[in-house]
Length: 404
Image (tube, rainbow, N blue to C red):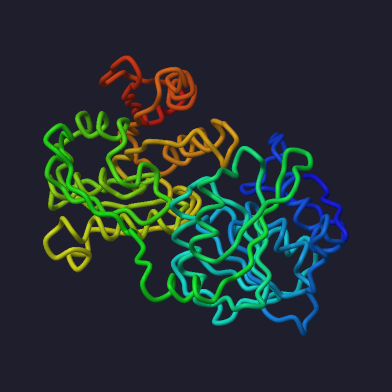
């Protein structure tokens, strides 16, 4: 746990799930820079009036709730695509003693506030998600709305600024401080009106998988903004679809970290008796998985053979309740490279699997996940491999009774 000290107060903040061994903080220099600017101004830009009379404050892209917690006294609205961000925010607000309901928590799939007077944007990793959300927010800003973005220098590109300019209005950046930069945007009613009424979003994107996609060949994929490789099938998943088991025989199967849900949907199409659980921490991903499933399975969710879960991996599933887990685990958390998420997914899978159940994963070969699986499951088998990727299988062995 670390303490963030800002002009708005000092708070103990953690990521979620909380891990005392985690060296990554729940904020970065961009959050600090933005909060300093709001309080005291930056260069020729003065401080921002956040008093109750100033109206509704909306924060999009808050990573772990640092901004929502620091600004809680001003009753902001937080909009996020991440269940983990939402859980971290709730924990940090409770730790700070913020009254329940002081901060409104919304997802990217929900309608934004009707009126936005201050819009704060932590630039997300996905340019598509930024575009999608700016288009959704544009009808709710007005000529007097203060719009300030923030990100690390490596996160802000010309394409980032062009999105703000095209959708909201004239845009410029601040000088860099501690490798962080601010974005100042002045809403233009003409630009905002155009975005609200006629500047059609390209999301969700829809495409058909070609014949090289293994068990996914011919299926339709539906991707909301922000999903990895949103306009095409990524090479890892393509390789995975050529290897996953096609004899599930009515098993309860989990597509863990489902993304657009094409893996789980391929299982459902091949085995109409299978029960498929689509699980991801991204609200955009689970919405995509539901749409992909509905586009390919006759009767869709009305068949009652699919479940869609937004949450912390498999934490919400009962122990020993599934037969097969399929996953293409991530190895990034925002801009940080880490195996913590994948290892947590492996441990959750072992708990959720019945004895004899199997975990299948596809991963970059260099990550060396076979060693982690052997340590956790006691076994790991290479199902398929090629120069860049490997498909691994681990089986949950039945516990042997100890000799008397």
